[in-house]
Length: 94
Image (cartoon, rainbow, N blue to C red; front, side, top):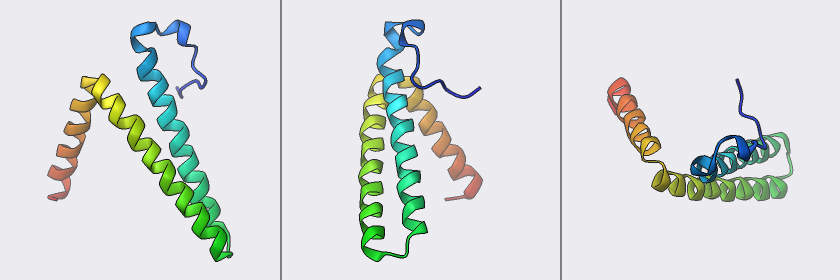
């Protein structure tokens, strides 16, 4: 089942509300990155392409900001991120 956005925050409880807000923010920013990069790929106008790719880059920064705060708040998420990186290293040898 896919996430419901906007989420009904009353159903998840106060403890999880801030982490859910951060995850929704991450999802929104990643959607924006995809949109701007797709639009940049679709245009032949080099000025427009540059602007779109710069905006996509800024959205990636926003993802990083939300993720940094989420990882401070959700220690399990932090551990699983580390586990995922380790698994990739083991699978790829890099």
